Figure 1: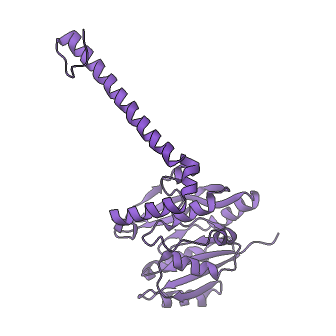
Figure 2: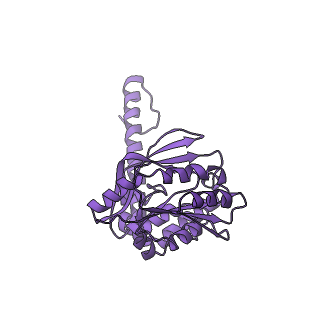
Figure 3: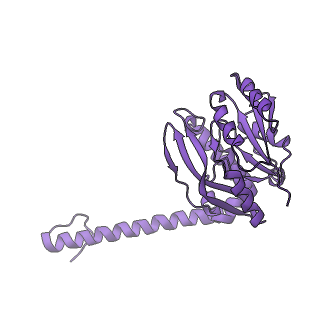
Length: 279
């Protein structure tokens, strides 16, 4: 069986100091059928010089540059030029293990219903340790992102949903993308091996999100994918009913606890704390 080409997409904006590490992890792959597209997203640093060094080292590295448009635009630009059946995004400051692509491809070959393959992950940089992520479910995907950016998927699925949404200008573009390609079906596989290394830095785009930006992102995703949230959580009316029921249950529980305390105090100490218990 002919091995499928994997296109690794590496956007870079002011990440030149880390780029060598990311590209070395690509070169170290046990799986050899890959191309690596480095997208210089209008970076003012020396991304170009470093990237071109790698293109000279191995012809599978390809260098592209464009006017700055943000992470979604840079990834889309790279994928548009990709020849691979499978896509693996890799941020310029992160790394992947040498076996990651091999294991991911094996999972796709064993199950045609799989749409996304990711793995266990480890943090490095300003913080170290296993990155604990909850087990994937579409219900949990309603609440937060469960899959980091460096997961493998088919280019066909990226085309079907129109790529990464460039309106996710403040971040969370991965979360929106996973919702888009998974909301109508398809399986997700998490490899049992650590295959992704996520760099923790003192400053990052996500750490700079304020309340206004967060509200914008939540509202945009909620409107765009209202069908997904309704399917998983029920109608907005149902959600309101659930909130009211939860409030009533909590009130009843609170009253019950107060009654027990009042009865105890009245019986043994002769006074009432809440005025609920009557002899």
